[in-house]
Image (cartoon, rainbow, N blue to C red):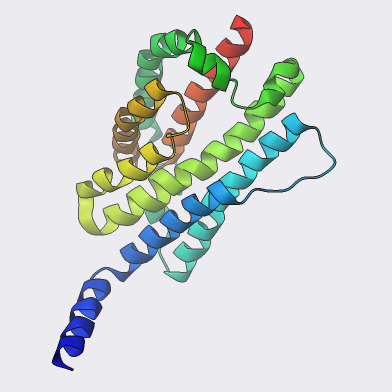
Length: 227
């Protein structure tokens, strides 16, 4: 009996230290996992449109449970980066990083594995109106993704453990790139660090949304042009 009493006491002590962080970790892990197994089923549309809407549904898998759990935990949304923060600071950060990325984006768009992957939505291959629609869907998806990665995980942990939260936020972001081209998957670790720095500097995850979307949209456009 003493063993089980000690086991219970140790388990309670471990789990009660940062209960909110444990909830954030579990919600993020379970929703990211669920997004791989469950899709938004949309009958009566073309396969290309269905693919885009399924990705949008995956974004909602990321964002909705995270948002609801934040409300239950009574975490102020501003603490999770729902704020414009300091635009004068992050605008320069975003522009600098985007222009650094431009040559890499152009190079990537010429590689065979990237040509097979991008544009991310096959819908974008059906002309400019469909490309614009695809990018609009992608913008919503990126907002959901960045809320999960930089808002919910990064800022959720940053509230309690400070800059160490950057290390926590890198791992799930990289794992979400495993099905992407190999070069992009490796580069996502550096991207995660850069986006975390920009988010913390600006006290907002919005700049990460803008930068992540700008890079993805540019890659899509270049991929369509090269075709």
